[in-house]
Amino acid sequence: MECHYCGGRLEKRHVEHVGRWGEEGRWVLVKDVPALVCTQCGERFFLPGVADVLSQAVQAGGAAGAPTVPMVVREFSAAAVQ
Image (cartoon, rainbow, N blue to C red; front, side):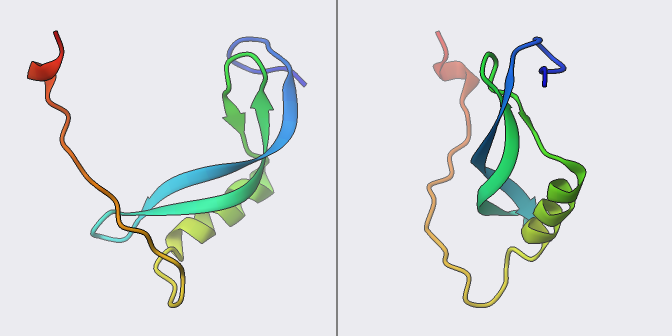
């Protein structure tokens, strides 16, 4: 298979996906997601069935008992770029 963006070769891998859920916009990390990944540009493609399950996993992100980790959140400061 060939990448739609750069023409590179796609290979099957398992990746991590980060998505947002809920009104507060909390982040959810979904691990071990099957994907086709371009060996040239790194673009990831999910098959339709995987995309549906992935969307459901993100929407259920606040499930009771799901492990959580603290995260530092910072705003990007354009003034810091020289």
